[in-house]
Length: 171
Image (cartoon, rainbow, N blue to C red; front, side, top):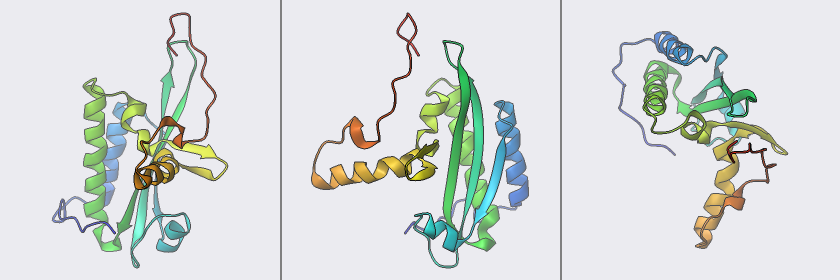
């Protein structure tokens, strides 16, 4: 189980104010489809999250529209899930979530990483198991290879179709 965190435990910022700041941050990056959800212990556990009794999970879902070099575009769906939140600690965990998302956008804005690269673990995908986060699908195979002493390879996820490349070799 995760360690108890002390960061932001004494915050005076109400969780609704943190949500508003996250919305403002996302809007500044042209992201307007935003959803917050509170997930009960039983629902989160049934979905595969490791949860402590008496806690809930909070989830932030949003979509970022992108246009590829070839002119095609679409939405990149992101799902950030924070498990094991005590109901009386919403202010603390929403502060944590705000600073987490803010830091990710600082890395993106600086050119250090691209959007999909920075949010890779949180990308929402659909496969034969339903809808989930990329990391949740990837980690089973990854930890299995680590546990066996093998070197993980790129075949830890189901196959994807190869996107078409332009004349210059870029997507």
